Length: 321
Image (cartoon, rainbow, N blue to C red):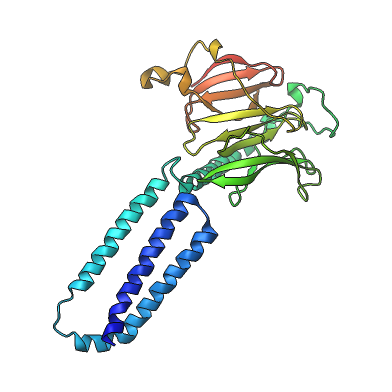
């Protein structure tokens, strides 16, 4: 009985260490189902050890009366040290680019930001939203700015990372996650003509082999739209534009050489034009399409670029303070 009692703390510690180990790998690489099952095994080992300890502790106390409990202290120290080490490792995975946990935190933040933005925009929706264009699948001619929808109503699925945008109740587009590694994702581009019941791949690599997290997806007509790709740090993003319904995407290039002034924060913080490399998703302001270049997603100041010809050409239009 004494020997069996001594085994119980070993089982408890072994199970606990295994849970910490798998928990770290879950935060680093993702895979809730895979690592969750292994953590459940560790929990079962801990439960078995605790049950054995409960059954044998009375007899063991009688046999060990008066003996020093230095092993118990050593076990507590070992458990505490393991907790600190693994806890620090898990915290590190929350730092941008360092693990799957950092991407999950990014997704939570973005969902909250989009929810707040949507609530604020709904109050002025009738006054600010231009006429919505609803065309047929065969229309390819260029539309005027008056027919372009000012919208940021793409939908993000936090469970699988897919991003959706619907032109109307029937026609929609999505960036579909087809592969992931260390929190970064690889997407294809798909289209639905039946309200999302079925989806057909239109482009197998819309981001030209780049991986990251979809920043946004919106279409102003059935053919003309934008897709954004960013990273966990939210201090850099790329915009891709399509004019053929997603069959091809090209990286948007803005005329940075025409910028004559930077936001007021630039001089104070030592920013240069190269630091303004986060592209916001386009929106319609006073009949023109606008994109802001910022130092990161949360920044309020930025460089304004406008287009009066539906994205064919872009012009520097000052700063957003």
